[in-house]
Length: 452
Image 1 (cartoon, rainbow, N blue to C red):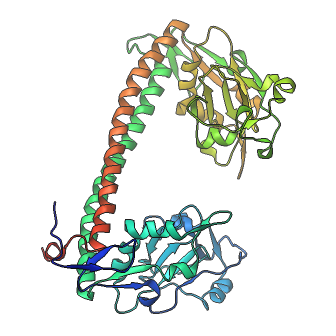
Image 2 (cartoon, rainbow, N blue to C red):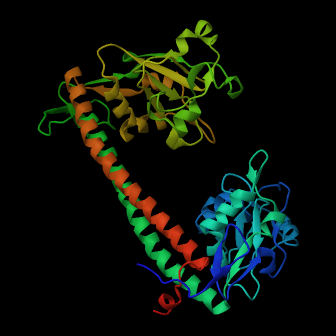
Image 3 (cartoon, rainbow, N blue to C red):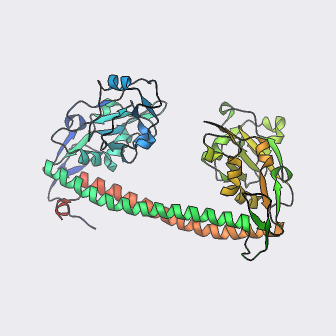
């Protein structure tokens, strides 16, 4: 869909904004608010289990406040004290002013009682500004680029209150602001619906992918193969000719380096730690593709057992959630690399296709037996004993390699479809941002569309 432009334009007087329609005004944010721009308290309160939700940057991500992402609550007494500085009101706009999500915005639509922390700046529009128009302007590409232009760095990126209040905002006539906001609400809603469809597709592909893996590594490729009891209730029957073994009979186990984050360097011998296993390079690790921190070369002499080789597995021995218990990485490289802190090395014996076991370890059936044994509340620990007693089920070696070949072919199809869905999602989101940016800066005239 193409849109007309306005008949006449004028210079906005703001370099990063460019020309705006004749009849529009450009004002700093401090001129379009009913009260001075403020933020939350600059102190860490005593958090309580039940109380008033205390909203910070992580709950500001999708244009509205996501109360499922509120990290903690404050007492009624602290809320009353903080409310003397600021008390949330419907249609207040929040902007993250420090941290990795600096510049992200949301508007208050919920009447839930809550309060905010210092990383959030508050913009409360005056009678000459429509809050949803201002929100869209603050989500436009020119405004976000201005934020990055003016932010500073300390321990993290941030933008000062004095800078925020002087950032420019377009101010069309009030009726026009409303028309633009209504148009964008309708059109971005359509785009959001298409994005949601693509994300559902990616989730379905992920589930189907996992189901294909689980079936192949548990039942094999022959649907007519005779079956036998595995002897394990939760595993059920396995094909005749398969063996069920504890991992202690399949692997040699050892520990990773006894180091801390402070021992890591930019140069030396590559080192994979539990953090990379959980957040970056689970399942398959190739240091030629995946950048890793290093340790000094002196560790080669003092800790040779912590060096891993192509085909080795490295399990994280701790996890911050139960779901992550059993996370591992499988090395596919001949490079020298260490297993680092909080890791357990599992080196497969000869006569085993390690990639078959990698797929099996990735299956929910295998991981569930690990998760049933781990102990913890906030941190879940996995010992060598837990891993050694865990069961794997192995077909003859030729069948292992055949299953791996089948999975690599089938999973490549899923990966292609997922990549296409992700590209479609990226294009839709780019379209969304471009539409918002063009409408709120007057590069397109949507007044007629707003009346349709």
